[in-house]
Image (cartoon, rainbow, N blue to C red; front, side, top):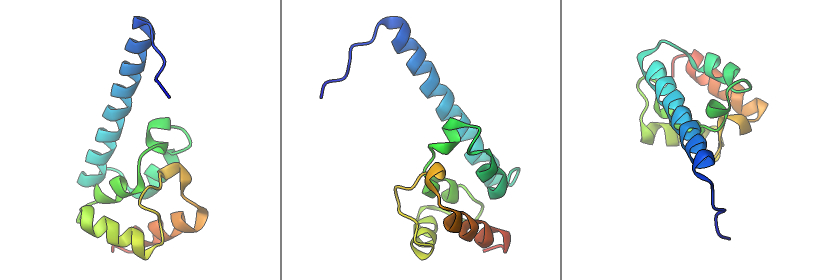
Length: 106
């Protein structure tokens, strides 16, 4: 299926929206890495911010202090969270398991 042709104004608006979403996600990952914000705060904001809701769980875990791509992938396997799962799609049990993991300092 071909993508629809966009007029210049619509295209510019879409590009601006995408750039803003990338900026928000990059700021969040930096705040997680530095410890300014915790996982609970991120999960609480998911309903309010569409850019956060569309983030992959593995990217959020990978931004946590002492976590990288490999450790994040292993944790997701241990918690039975699909690699493609986004924050909005976390179930209540998955959410609680993630919170429990990071609140006990794993």
